[in-house]
Image (tube, rainbow, N blue to C red; front, side):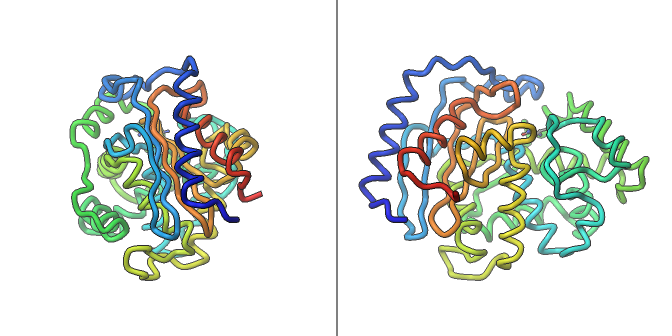
Length: 309
Ligand SMILES: NC(=O)CC[C@H](N)C(=O)O
């Protein structure tokens, strides 16, 4: 695949102008009260390629709440820490259900379908709580090493806001505990989980963080092998099949890249061996994924003519 440098910027400019005309019908997430305060018209995109070149538009430097995008990074740390043992406690199948489904857990006897639905991410959080004496500090260190940027931090206000209304996640964590699939104190695991979801990053920072998944596990800024090739293969496979909950098929169909969304309105997608891209627009479609973000990535792979397929 060869899209030359000017083409990427031209394509991003076209995406911005085409989508500024679209009448968005989605709604900004409000079940986490702090997220409801984010202006609905924020819109930014940043593409970072393996040559280290950046292309962007709009609010691509503004930090926002990564929410479920952070689940990819906590999974990477858990895989690095305990390896294949993780798969005894979490599945690798698409859920075909909402991200916070309780009924799936009942059907699967306490084994979450995959690490990207909330139940699965809570088991991953439990693994990190078991393996680090200070899991919040360990996760931040991991992010700082991955990005080379030690200003990335938890948003304490968002974490507290989610906790104040986090009844479903409390239910899920207690339910996991009842099945014996939660080793630690439920409160402690949820505290870590709410903090993990509150990590604030911009499109630029997310694209730079996710380039490791396009670069077979190597960091671009230091050439260090940060994750193994096999870990990256598995994480990309999970993003492709489970990154958008019950819209994973639709995202694959329209965009054709592994990716992960969050209720903060962000989406990150990876074109292995080429680039990582992040887009942010807060209004969500009924499945909980950024409406304009999905459209922007569809335009990207259509206009470049390249997806993983
Ligand atoms: N899809 C999401 O981004 C959900 C993450 C959010 N923190 C929650 O647990 O509900």
